[in-house]
Length: 70
Image: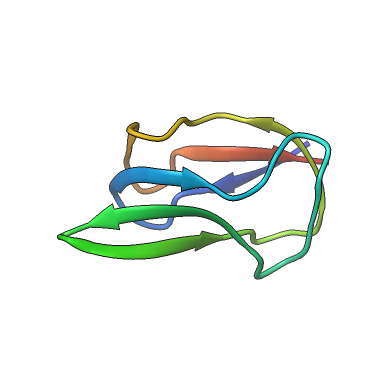
């Protein structure tokens, strides 16, 4: 299984994918807020979402796992 990691610190606002869904490399998978700006985390791989590791309201640091993809 591969990890989709946060590329910067921020608060998760919304998860845009569900377990079992297919994602492609570059697809938006979560919306987050950092420094009062809303931005997107993109998947760095293609595959099927096996587990969502964060919830809306969670704070993530750079490198934290957001999703597991197979």
